[in-house]
Image 1 (spheres, rainbow, N blue to C red):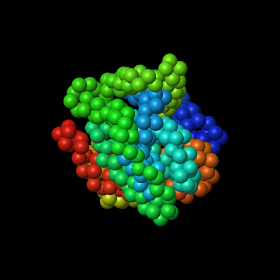
Image 2: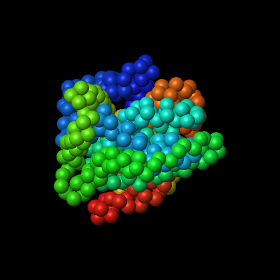
Image 3: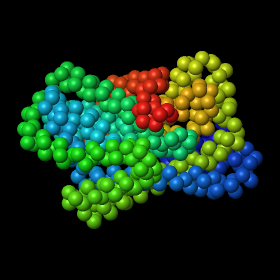
Length: 426
């Protein structure tokens, strides 16, 4: 397998997109290992990787988030958060964290969240005297909850690859996501007091009431999805279609959606969906190669040769995923490592839903972790602050996310409480 990893690394260094690097590396390995005849089966493997009905949820949830974003829902969410906590010292930093939590229930994507909220919140915080690098880091790390709180594109991919219930995975992400937000809120409050960030005026009651009413349609969407799936009203795929219809109705009712804005949402959704599905199809080639060469068994044997202690194995697995997350995006990691992960889950005897919550949180943290953390690049560009300054400000926030990850890994009820309560067990 050394030739595959060498080829893959070389292609990445050369600037080849991850999807193509996966496909070319896997194909080249088959030729170099004397299995060139199996290349004829690769188109079928690629189609099988994306020919799954539940994957329709990805473009549909993305479209629902895009429609709400272009329809002005993002602005209403920020205004609602201002009404709740904007009057605290350094209030806009708390507004940023709350806004991320609310927006996570719409987008399901960390990068979409960072781009949408960063363009609004970073300039606002800067005008209040909050350092641009800190403002950027807060938006970037807070956006990690986008793929954790339902609906989550990353959870959907994990569910498709592992066979775990997507509805239960959605619920398993709620408490960890809220845990990250709570930790960031505490840190934002402490940092505001320590740095002497300004205090802003409190909204009047009538203004606050208007902000709450305007934000209700956006806040209700995650509830509709979870209750609908739990009650058997619709499947996760149908829930995604309902989310799109709901976003259209809300946008048209508020007269914020125009033909040009709907078209813009459709184009953005098409580009992102095509990228995700292309990565999925290409990574199916690597999955085929890993299965052929029994890589999951080899890695499992290697880890067991180091230790057979379950706690140490779990720490090693988390470290392995965190290191991968520093260089690859979450969906690529899941597809690339799922055979290995399923093998390790069996060895550790972990519940599939609990294991999924841990894995997804793990790979998502990488989005805000140097050297490749894409969220840090997005917010650095939006703020104009040097990337090195943003990374320095983000470090304590990443530590908070890692502490939540350890809770999720070693305390199963953190992720299983809601699935067990609403589904009667995972």
